[in-house]
Length: 429
Image 1 (spheres, one colour):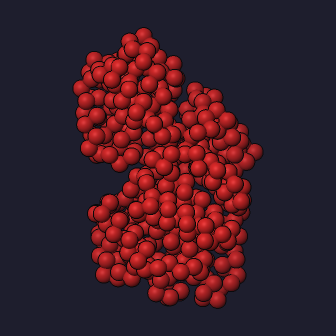
Image 2: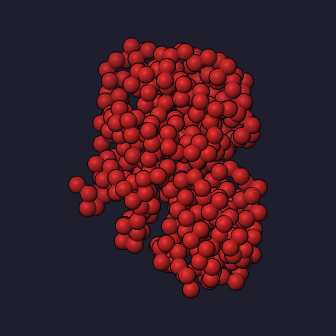
Image 3: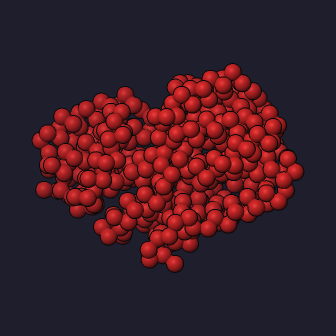
C-alpha cells in the first residue's frame, strides 16, 4: 500500500493519485496556491480515493466555496466506507466543520491525533488563530493551543508544517526569539509557504521591527499568486507596516489594490476584517478615511455575513457601522449580540467592545475608557492574532490621550510594545 508524506498508508494504488494528493495537501497546509488543481488531478487518477475528495472539500471550504466543499465532503464520506479506519476517521474530521458541526470537531480531532499524531491534515484545523482553538471563545486559548501542539511535537518536530504552526503559537504567547527560530526552519524547508511568510511577518511586528517585516514580505508577496488564500491578509500586513513607517501614500495604494472589497481577492473572512482594520488604524493615526470607503466595507460585510455570530467578524462589523455613522444599525447589532451573549462562547465581550468603539467615535472619552479598559484583557476571546486585536488597545490609548490621561496612555503603549511572554513553556528560557 502506498503512503502519504507522513508515512501513513493511503487507499490508492495509483502513484499519480498519491503524488498529486501529497502536493495538494501540502498546498493546503502551506497556503500555497494550486491545491485545487493538484487534488483534482489526484481524483482524476483515482476517482474512488476518499482522502483526495476530503482534502479537496477542505481546500474549497477554506476558500469559501461552500457548495463544492459540501459536495466533495459527501462523496468523501461515501467512499470512506471502503477505506481503512484511520482514513474514515480522517475524512470525518475534515467533513464535520463543512457540514456545520464545528462544535463536535475539536474533540474528535483530539481523539484522532492521539492515535495518529502524524496526521497533519487532521491536526491543522485545530491550529492557528483562526482555527478551532483560536476561535473557541476561551480565555486560555493560547495555552490550550500550545498544549495541543506540544502533544504532536515528538512526532512532527522535523516537519515544516508543524514548525510553522508551532512558531505561530509561540509568537502569540510572546516567545518571539523561539518563534523566529522555528519559522526560519519552516521557511528554509518550504519558502513558498503563505502561512510561513505570514508568521515570520507577525514575529517582526511583535518585535516592533516593521521595516524588516516589510523588506521581507513585500518582495515575497510579489511572487505569490493573487489567487492564493493569503494574498489579501499578507497585503494587509504590508499596508499596516507602510502606515506605521509613515509611508502613507503607498499604504493607501496597497489597501485600494489588494485589501479593500473589490480590490482584494480572497476568502470573505479576510476581506471583511482586514479592510475595516486598516481603515480604523489609519483613522487612529490621524489620516482621513472617506465615508464612502466605510460604506463600501459595511455593504461587503452585510453581504458576506448577513447574520452575526462569528465574534471576530462582528467586532469588525461594529467598526464599520460606527465609522459609517449608522447608529441604528449599530444599536440593532449590539442588541442582538447582547441577546446571544448567554449562549455565545465569547459571552458579552463583543457587544462591550462595540459599545466602547461607538463611544470613542462620538468623542465620549470617559465612556470609551470605562468600557474598553475592563474588556481589554478578554479580547483574546474574539479570536484572531494579537496584532489584529491591537485595535482595541490602540483605541483605548487614543481615548486616554484625547482625555488628557497621558501617563495612562504611555503605560498602555509601553506594555503593548514590550509584549512579555504570557505563559511559561517547559524547556524554553
